[in-house]
Image 1 (cartoon, rainbow over the protein chains, first blue to last red):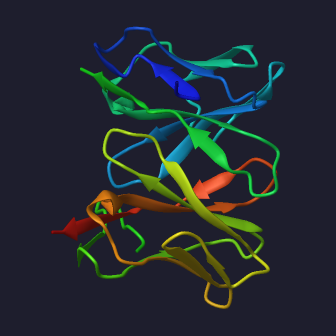
Image 2: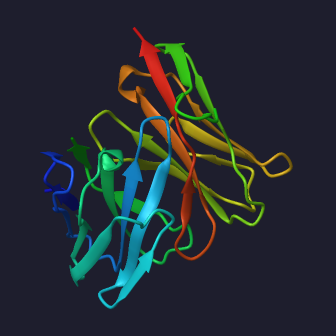
Image 3: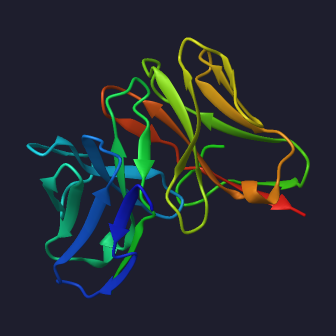
Length: 113
Length: 111
């Protein structure tokens, strides 16, 4: 079984709809991250969490919110989706190791019409 | 190997040849550098890392070189195989949590 899972894998929605992307991990890591990937661009950090009570904004948090329901679960919400939020979204986990290696889920492809 | 805007650089190599993928990083204070491989439809996967006090590190068929003078990182893949076709990202560790990712290079392996 995959260590980091994301649901759904694909989603098409309309402008103004509320969308939730879910992430679960079995790696036992404290740190979880949400990234966005656009064609030709690197991964950009939306939100990150070091533990259940610790939530922090990344570089592109506007229009997004998150919830860390448990150590193993970290969800990303788009309260009112807009077309420029069409992208590939990745959840990742990590430890406080020196290299800060992160482990990625398979991604969710979101299209906002 | 750096991308500008929406254009993803592409490296095309013949199967069996060696591949060299380049990356320029921005922060002299970064203490670790990581290479990730992203296959189509999948999330990025760790390949190899290197600490800033090293200039070379070898793995299985892969070697990473670090030149701190010019802030340059390269990934060398020996005897490139079709399964190596993917997008490759470098990432620099800039602190206790933050990885800064490059925009990636697409590697295409010709049979």
